Image (cartoon, rainbow, N blue to C red; front, side, top):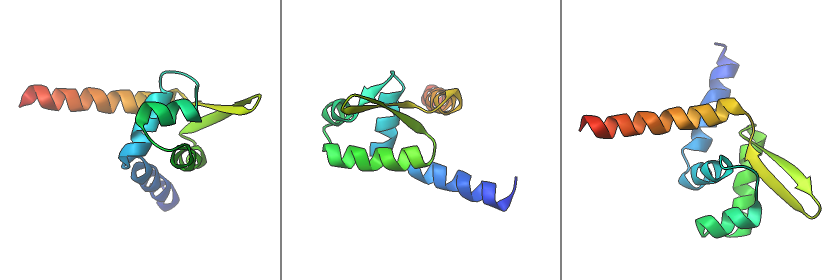
Length: 98
């Protein structure tokens, strides 16, 4: 893996280290969702959710699709979804070992 790839990977994990961004990603795993719906579900302002989504989109973790006046966000691809699912399984295994 090149130094450039390592830097991109580190930045991706840094983005995932923020609880709000991680919660937004988890919301997007359920299918296409509008900014307002994410904001309401997570009790965050729409402007804050939009900011986080812009960062996540820049890292290619989510994609947005415009429908009329709204943009609906979803997980960018199966790889992102699989990483999140694998980490959830990993965490639940850790709890079972305690």
